[in-house]
Amino acid sequence: MDVETTVISMERAALDRWCTGDPWGYTEICADEVTYFDPNLDGRLDGLEALRQLVAPLEGKLKIDHYEMVNPKVQVHGDVAVLSYNLVDQALAPDGTATTDAWNSTEVYRRQDGKWRIIHAHWSRPKSRE
Amino acid sequence: MDVETTVISMERAALDRWCTGDPWGYTEICADEVTYFDPNLDGRLDGLEALRQLVAPLEGKLKIDHYEMVNPKVQVHGDVAVLSYNLVDQALAPDGTATTDAWNSTEVYRRQDGKWRIIHAHWSRPKSRE
Picture 1: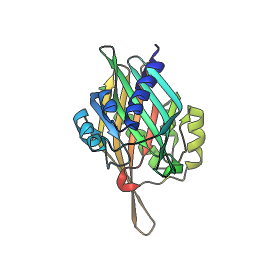
Picture 2: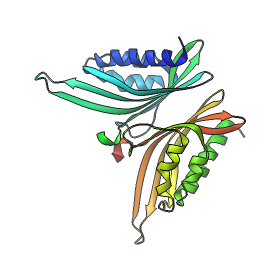
Picture 3: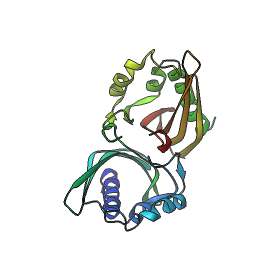
Picture 4: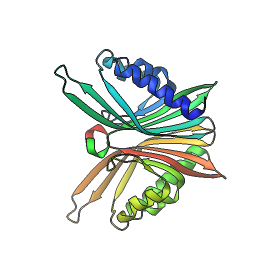
Protein backbone atom coordinates (compact mmCIF):
# COMPACT_ATOMS: atom_id res chain seq x y z
CA MET A 1 0.00 0.00 0.00
CA ASP A 2 1.49 3.38 -0.91
CA VAL A 3 1.92 6.13 1.68
CA GLU A 4 -1.04 8.16 0.42
CA THR A 5 -3.41 5.19 0.70
CA THR A 6 -1.97 4.21 4.09
CA VAL A 7 -2.46 7.54 5.83
CA ILE A 8 -5.88 8.19 4.27
CA SER A 9 -7.00 4.72 5.40
CA MET A 10 -5.71 5.37 8.93
CA GLU A 11 -7.45 8.74 9.03
CA ARG A 12 -10.74 7.23 7.85
CA ALA A 13 -10.54 4.41 10.40
CA ALA A 14 -10.06 6.98 13.18
CA LEU A 15 -12.94 9.09 11.85
CA ASP A 16 -15.18 6.00 11.64
CA ARG A 17 -14.61 5.31 15.34
CA TRP A 18 -14.90 9.00 16.28
CA CYS A 19 -18.32 9.20 14.60
CA THR A 20 -19.65 6.40 16.78
CA GLY A 21 -18.57 8.05 20.03
CA ASP A 22 -15.10 6.52 20.31
CA PRO A 23 -12.38 9.19 20.34
CA TRP A 24 -9.59 6.68 21.13
CA GLY A 25 -9.09 5.58 17.55
CA TYR A 26 -7.74 9.07 16.95
CA THR A 27 -5.40 9.23 19.93
CA GLU A 28 -4.12 5.71 19.14
CA ILE A 29 -2.64 6.97 15.86
CA CYS A 30 -1.03 10.03 17.47
CA ALA A 31 2.64 10.08 18.53
CA ASP A 32 3.76 11.04 22.03
CA GLU A 33 5.10 14.31 20.62
CA VAL A 34 1.78 15.29 19.01
CA THR A 35 0.98 19.01 18.90
CA TYR A 36 -2.62 20.06 18.28
CA PHE A 37 -4.75 23.10 17.43
CA ASP A 38 -8.54 23.23 17.33
CA PRO A 39 -11.02 26.14 17.40
CA ASN A 40 -12.17 25.31 20.93
CA LEU A 41 -8.71 25.97 22.36
CA ASP A 42 -6.96 29.24 23.01
CA GLY A 43 -3.56 27.94 21.99
CA ARG A 44 -1.62 24.82 21.08
CA LEU A 45 -1.99 21.64 23.07
CA ASP A 46 1.26 19.67 23.45
CA GLY A 47 1.67 15.94 23.92
CA LEU A 48 -0.42 12.79 23.70
CA GLU A 49 -1.42 12.77 27.36
CA ALA A 50 -2.88 16.28 27.06
CA LEU A 51 -4.77 15.23 23.92
CA ARG A 52 -6.17 12.17 25.71
CA GLN A 53 -7.44 14.40 28.50
CA LEU A 54 -9.00 16.75 25.95
CA VAL A 55 -10.99 14.05 24.16
CA ALA A 56 -11.86 11.85 27.15
CA PRO A 57 -15.11 13.76 27.94
CA LEU A 58 -16.29 13.11 24.37
CA GLU A 59 -16.42 9.34 24.82
CA GLY A 60 -19.95 8.13 24.15
CA LYS A 61 -21.12 11.65 23.38
CA LEU A 62 -20.27 11.79 19.68
CA LYS A 63 -22.81 10.71 17.09
CA ILE A 64 -22.11 11.57 13.50
CA ASP A 65 -24.18 9.78 10.89
CA HIS A 66 -22.19 10.54 7.82
CA TYR A 67 -18.95 12.24 6.86
CA GLU A 68 -17.11 13.04 3.69
CA MET A 69 -13.37 13.59 3.31
CA VAL A 70 -13.30 16.25 0.61
CA ASN A 71 -10.31 16.77 -1.66
CA PRO A 72 -7.69 14.93 0.42
CA LYS A 73 -4.07 15.58 -0.54
CA VAL A 74 -0.95 13.88 0.82
CA GLN A 75 2.47 15.50 0.46
CA VAL A 76 5.11 12.86 1.18
CA HIS A 77 8.74 13.70 1.93
CA GLY A 78 10.82 10.90 3.42
CA ASP A 79 9.22 9.72 6.62
CA VAL A 80 6.78 12.63 6.84
CA ALA A 81 3.38 12.80 5.10
CA VAL A 82 1.22 15.92 5.29
CA LEU A 83 -2.47 15.05 4.84
CA SER A 84 -4.86 17.96 4.30
CA TYR A 85 -8.57 17.86 3.48
CA ASN A 86 -11.97 19.31 4.23
CA LEU A 87 -14.20 17.26 6.45
CA VAL A 88 -17.95 17.63 6.00
CA ASP A 89 -20.07 15.78 8.49
CA GLN A 90 -23.75 15.33 9.17
CA ALA A 91 -25.64 14.40 12.31
CA LEU A 92 -29.31 13.48 12.39
CA ALA A 93 -31.50 14.56 15.31
CA PRO A 94 -34.13 12.08 16.54
CA ASP A 95 -36.73 13.97 14.48
CA GLY A 96 -34.67 13.43 11.35
CA THR A 97 -33.34 16.99 11.12
CA ALA A 98 -29.82 17.01 9.67
CA THR A 99 -27.09 19.25 11.05
CA THR A 100 -24.03 19.65 8.88
CA ASP A 101 -20.60 20.82 9.96
CA ALA A 102 -17.36 21.49 8.08
CA TRP A 103 -13.66 21.60 8.93
CA ASN A 104 -10.26 22.40 7.51
CA SER A 105 -7.98 19.58 8.57
CA THR A 106 -4.20 19.25 8.60
CA GLU A 107 -2.68 16.00 9.87
CA VAL A 108 1.10 15.66 9.75
CA TYR A 109 2.06 11.99 9.92
CA ARG A 110 5.54 10.67 10.66
CA ARG A 111 6.76 7.11 10.12
CA GLN A 112 8.74 5.68 13.00
CA ASP A 113 9.69 2.01 13.28
CA GLY A 114 7.48 1.34 10.27
CA LYS A 115 4.38 2.89 11.82
CA TRP A 116 2.75 6.15 10.74
CA ARG A 117 1.65 8.39 13.59
CA ILE A 118 0.25 11.94 13.73
CA ILE A 119 2.82 14.41 15.10
CA HIS A 120 0.82 17.59 14.44
CA ALA A 121 -2.87 18.29 13.86
CA HIS A 122 -4.66 21.54 13.07
CA TRP A 123 -8.47 21.69 12.89
CA SER A 124 -10.33 24.88 11.99
CA ARG A 125 -13.49 26.14 10.36
CA PRO A 126 -13.72 27.15 6.73
CA LYS A 127 -15.15 30.61 6.13
CA SER A 128 -18.68 29.42 5.46
CA ARG A 129 -18.81 27.77 8.91
CA GLU A 130 -17.35 30.49 11.12
CA MET B 1 22.51 27.63 12.66
CA ASP B 2 20.28 24.75 13.77
CA VAL B 3 17.02 23.94 11.98
CA GLU B 4 14.83 25.43 14.69
CA THR B 5 16.66 28.77 14.59
CA THR B 6 16.69 28.75 10.78
CA VAL B 7 12.96 28.29 10.25
CA ILE B 8 11.95 30.65 13.06
CA SER B 9 14.26 33.32 11.60
CA MET B 10 12.77 32.81 8.13
CA GLU B 11 9.24 33.03 9.54
CA ARG B 12 10.06 36.22 11.44
CA ALA B 13 11.65 37.82 8.38
CA ALA B 14 8.49 37.07 6.35
CA LEU B 15 6.27 38.44 9.15
CA ASP B 16 8.42 41.58 9.39
CA ARG B 17 7.83 42.30 5.70
CA TRP B 18 4.13 41.30 5.91
CA CYS B 19 3.58 43.81 8.72
CA THR B 20 4.86 46.67 6.56
CA GLY B 21 2.51 45.87 3.69
CA ASP B 22 4.78 43.49 1.76
CA PRO B 23 3.21 40.03 1.38
CA TRP B 24 5.94 38.79 -0.98
CA GLY B 25 8.38 37.87 1.76
CA TYR B 26 5.93 35.14 2.66
CA THR B 27 5.37 33.77 -0.84
CA GLU B 28 9.14 33.86 -1.47
CA ILE B 29 9.68 31.22 1.20
CA CYS B 30 6.86 28.98 -0.05
CA ALA B 31 7.50 26.00 -2.33
CA ASP B 32 5.69 25.52 -5.66
CA GLU B 33 3.73 22.68 -4.07
CA VAL B 34 2.47 24.80 -1.13
CA THR B 35 -0.99 23.99 0.19
CA TYR B 36 -2.74 26.57 2.35
CA PHE B 37 -5.72 27.03 4.67
CA ASP B 38 -6.90 30.28 6.20
CA PRO B 39 -10.23 31.32 7.79
CA ASN B 40 -11.16 33.57 4.85
CA LEU B 41 -11.25 30.63 2.46
CA ASP B 42 -13.86 27.93 2.08
CA GLY B 43 -11.32 25.21 1.41
CA ARG B 44 -7.67 24.52 0.70
CA LEU B 45 -5.72 26.61 -1.78
CA ASP B 46 -3.17 24.63 -3.82
CA GLY B 47 0.07 25.88 -5.32
CA LEU B 48 2.30 28.92 -5.14
CA GLU B 49 0.67 30.74 -8.06
CA ALA B 50 -2.75 30.53 -6.36
CA LEU B 51 -1.21 31.83 -3.11
CA ARG B 52 0.43 34.73 -4.97
CA GLN B 53 -2.96 35.67 -6.42
CA LEU B 54 -4.54 35.46 -2.97
CA VAL B 55 -2.08 37.84 -1.31
CA ALA B 56 -1.50 40.24 -4.23
CA PRO B 57 -4.43 42.53 -3.25
CA LEU B 58 -2.89 42.94 0.23
CA GLU B 59 0.23 44.67 -1.09
CA GLY B 60 0.52 48.09 0.53
CA LYS B 61 -2.67 47.51 2.54
CA LEU B 62 -1.16 45.77 5.57
CA LYS B 63 0.01 47.80 8.56
CA ILE B 64 0.81 45.93 11.74
CA ASP B 65 2.76 47.81 14.37
CA HIS B 66 3.80 44.97 16.58
CA TYR B 67 3.61 41.22 16.65
CA GLU B 68 4.62 38.49 18.99
CA MET B 69 5.38 34.87 18.08
CA VAL B 70 4.05 33.07 21.13
CA ASN B 71 5.30 29.64 22.19
CA PRO B 72 6.94 28.59 18.91
CA LYS B 73 7.76 24.90 18.57
CA VAL B 74 9.67 23.17 15.77
CA GLN B 75 9.37 19.41 15.23
CA VAL B 76 12.22 18.32 12.94
CA HIS B 77 12.25 14.98 11.14
CA GLY B 78 14.78 14.63 8.34
CA ASP B 79 14.17 17.34 5.76
CA VAL B 80 10.80 18.38 7.21
CA ALA B 81 10.31 20.86 10.05
CA VAL B 82 6.85 21.58 11.48
CA LEU B 83 6.70 25.06 13.04
CA SER B 84 3.64 25.86 15.15
CA TYR B 85 2.95 28.97 17.22
CA ASN B 86 0.39 31.57 18.18
CA LEU B 87 0.73 34.93 16.50
CA VAL B 88 -0.53 37.96 18.40
CA ASP B 89 -0.44 41.22 16.49
CA GLN B 90 -1.38 44.79 17.16
CA ALA B 91 -2.28 47.62 14.81
CA LEU B 92 -2.56 51.26 15.88
CA ALA B 93 -5.23 53.50 14.40
CA PRO B 94 -4.25 57.13 13.66
CA ASP B 95 -5.92 58.14 16.94
CA GLY B 96 -3.66 55.72 18.82
CA THR B 97 -6.34 53.08 19.44
CA ALA B 98 -4.80 49.61 19.41
CA THR B 99 -6.50 46.65 17.73
CA THR B 100 -5.15 43.23 18.63
CA ASP B 101 -5.60 40.03 16.69
CA ALA B 102 -4.53 36.43 17.31
CA TRP B 103 -3.87 33.34 15.19
CA ASN B 104 -3.05 29.67 15.40
CA SER B 105 -0.28 29.04 12.90
CA THR B 106 1.11 25.87 11.37
CA GLU B 107 3.94 26.13 8.86
CA VAL B 108 5.39 22.91 7.47
CA TYR B 109 8.84 23.57 6.03
CA ARG B 110 10.74 21.22 3.75
CA ARG B 111 14.44 21.42 2.88
CA GLN B 112 15.23 20.99 -0.79
CA ASP B 113 18.64 21.68 -2.32
CA GLY B 114 19.70 23.12 1.03
CA LYS B 115 16.83 25.65 1.19
CA TRP B 116 13.89 25.49 3.59
CA ARG B 117 10.53 26.29 1.99
CA ILE B 118 6.94 26.15 3.29
CA ILE B 119 5.01 23.24 1.73
CA HIS B 120 1.87 23.57 3.88
CA ALA B 121 0.38 26.40 5.95
CA HIS B 122 -2.71 26.47 8.15
CA TRP B 123 -3.91 29.72 9.76
CA SER B 124 -6.92 29.87 12.05
CA ARG B 125 -8.35 31.74 15.01
CA PRO B 126 -7.94 30.62 18.59
CA LYS B 127 -11.20 30.33 20.54
CA SER B 128 -10.92 33.73 22.18
CA ARG B 129 -10.80 35.40 18.74
CA GLU B 130 -13.61 33.61 16.94
